[in-house]
Figure 1 (tube, helix red, strand yellow):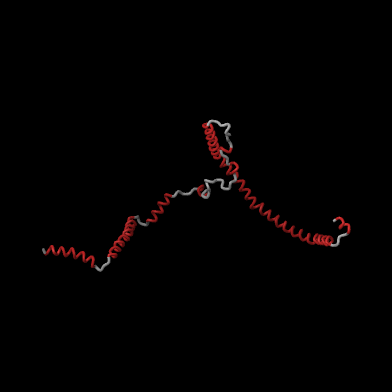
Figure 2: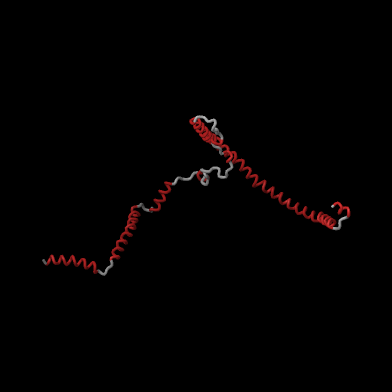
Length: 211
C-alpha cells in the first residue's frame, strides 16, 4: 500500500512539478532549435573532413560547373549579339518579303480543285524555302568574304584618304569664303548702298508716269 501511495504521489508530484516549475518551457524549445542549428554545421564539417586534402566544397562545385559549361568557340564569341529570329531588323529587304497570296491568286469565277491549289501552295513555299537555303549555303560564304573585303576597303579609304582630303578641302574653302566675303563687303556693298540711295530719292517725272 505504501508503494502504491508512493507511486500515486510520484505521478501527481510529477505533474505538479511540471506546472510549478520556475524554468520556462521556451528555454527547452530554444534548446531544441540550437541543436537543429548545430546539425547542418556538423554535417558540413563531416563532409569537409571526407574531402581530399587541399580541396573544398567550392572547388568541387566550380569543377562541376566547368564541366557543364561548354567552351565558347570563335563563332560563338563573334555571334553572341546576333538576333537569329529577326535577321532584317532594319527592314532593308521588305520589298522582297513576298508570300504565296501576294503572287498567285484565283478569282471566284475561275478556281481550280482544292487539292490542286493546296499542292501548288506546298510546291511554291517548299521550293522557295529550300532552294533559297541550298543556294544561300553555296553563296553565303563567298559573298560574305567578298563584301567583307569591299567594305573593309571602303572603310580604309574613308578613314585614311577621303575624310582627310575632305578636311583639307573644307579648310581651303573656309579661307576662300573669308576672302570672297571681304571682297564683296569692300567692293559690292558700297555700290548697292549707293543704288539704294538713288532709288529712295525723288523719282524723275518719267519714272513716276511709268509707275
